[in-house]
Image: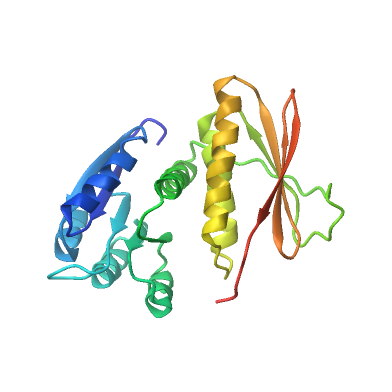
Length: 239
């Protein structure tokens, strides 16, 4: 699906919120933006337009975001849903996560975080379509001399698709194995994207080695010109 259009449905009853999200989304290439003012419109639009990704508010008239997400997930289980809300209630977040959503972002929205999430989901669609791949290695290199829980994973980065695959892998691996990452992880991921983009812009090939101990995620960036170690301090809690 490398050259196909990704449909993104923005669902929010406040027009200004939709405008802000549209501005963020327009920085991403090859997308088509759809809009809905409430959950009912979101369900109807999903049935007719079949968006790949839905950005869902919770508190809306006529039908709220939870009911709409439940219907969409039951009828279109492959649709990716990111919840964007001002609610901070843990029970609400857990209920959404049980539906199998792909992200739960809190307002005020951090623009870089949403962009990273969307790029990761678009990379997911490409991987499912078979147009992208991830290279992994079961080596046991540990430059930080700490106990390894899983395995070392190596990513060869030459293009923005490769960069998105790295972000997708990190996001999926650390959010879908019964853990919750903090916003520090999203911020660090965004900073990593900016670092890698500089190398891509200069047409420099890079390899990224990902490791973890019991508390942290470690990235080693290896390029022809430098070696950089980056430590992500990731807070996790069991659900």
